[in-house]
Length: 329
Image 1 (spheres, rainbow, N blue to C red):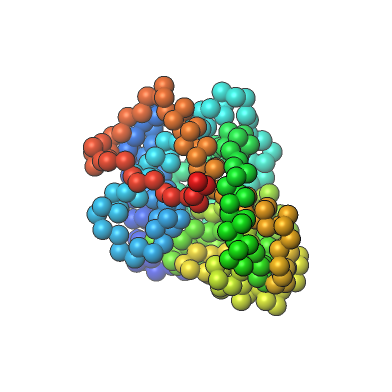
Image 2 (image 1 turned 90 degrees about the horizontal axis):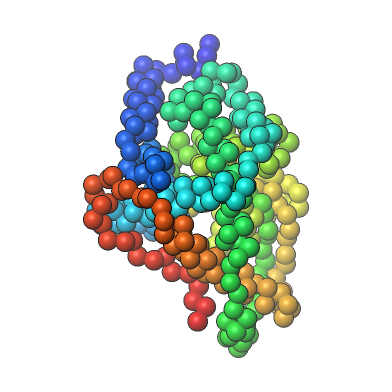
């Protein structure tokens, strides 16, 4: 008996209703960038990512906060569209073999071809459209690395000030911590659905012999390296206490998000060397300089672009307040 047959009529109706909503949301155009449409479906997805990243403590966002999240999400989508266009202009290309690997890996993570087709139906996408999204993610990754990470500024004086401040305050001691590479599944509105997404990723990850490169970047997760301590990631920290370097976790929930990780390094508590301290402080300042460089680049990208905002509530909306980074001055 197939999974489709095991579902109740109510569940099947809910699935079908959600697919219809996704398809309708893709038809609703909220903005246009140099003739390229941005639709409501993608805006809602980006809103979830923005809310999870910057509004975790807001349990019930009011109208003003919701509009702010929506504005930031639309700004991000506009930026991505312009960035991809710039990637093409600079000759950055996607890798067809990597795209096909991602598609094949995703298909293999489902028990039947029907399962993969249901996945596409939930996203209101064809297989060709999904391939285009994967290729677009590769272009965005390539141009962002070139224009943001490789061109971010530095401020040795700011590092020196922080070093003296931390040293005098006795803050240059390193607590017990782990370094991991992880699949981070952003929290969505439906916790059960988000967990199900994480479980599917785990099955695909295990099937592909824990090869991070074979994961399909479909916008529901990111792959990153992080330092885990018991204050910032308590649930992950507790889970890793009995793990060894090179081990892989199951799905771990932490603060509403879901994580699948490999333990790369374990560090006992100790005093930092001066070199380690300065590197740590440079890393702490890096997001600030990356954001400054990104804003500078966005201004250049938007300068001659034709941007039409079609969503009525955002046409006259004030710009969203800046997200503060680490102060460098």
